[in-house]
Amino acid sequence: MAATVGAIVTRIQDWIIDSDIEDVEVWALMDEVIDEVLTTTDPWYCNNYATTARTAANHMNDSDLIPPAYVDGVLAVDANIANGSEVPDNSEYLRALEYPTGLVRPGMVYYGALADEVQLQWIGLEEMNYRYPFTVDDSGGEPAYWTSYNDTLIVGPTPSLACTLAVFGVYRPVAISANGDSNVFSTYDDRLLRYGVMNKLILYNYEEDGGRGPNIERTYNRLVRQLRSASKHRDKMAHRVTSRRAGTRRT
Image (cartoon, rainbow, N blue to C red):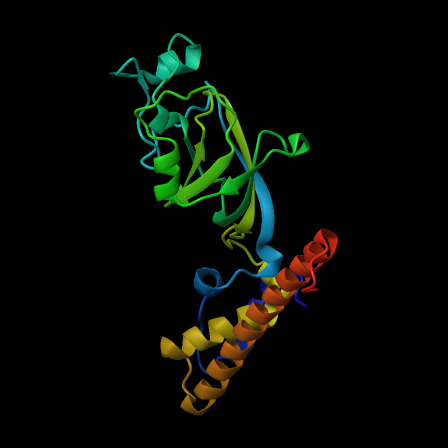
């Protein structure tokens, strides 16, 4: 397994016929491959957790993903939220928090610190709006449910301004910007990254020997299927452990 991006770049450049493709171009193609894989697959090595928090100092009132904050029906002023003179009270704002940085798909959501062990139950957005209509004031409660839209998490009942969510899910690695970089793809799945880039180079006509193209594409697709299978197998094993603990027969 490759330890750094540079090791993969060298292999790719050695493979290309009569091409002087720059390292930075290969990095961009690597990021394209990662984005495409994450569109259809939940790689086991991309599972992680992070937190998103809203406070008076970090109140998320300038985000296109979050409804604007109001106080008694009047649009809140950012500076006043920060100094504590205004506390938003509209439910549509207080229920919404941005995804943690890098989150692609949320899996499990906890309210507060992980040590509090307050895991929220997922429900659909329509069910969330039905259970907690915005016309009802339920602010200051402890959330019990979560859902999402775009890159926004919605919780209900409505929490107070200060709110922290810990989110387990699939996270995108940081974009590649140097040969000395390493991420979970280069560490655990360097062949998928390498063949994915080579497949793109064929599509972009960097590779002159057309005879190698189908083999490269088949190998890349096989590696994606293997990754998908390995990730599903890990999920299945985790469900089996849960089933045994619950005393069910399907183990």
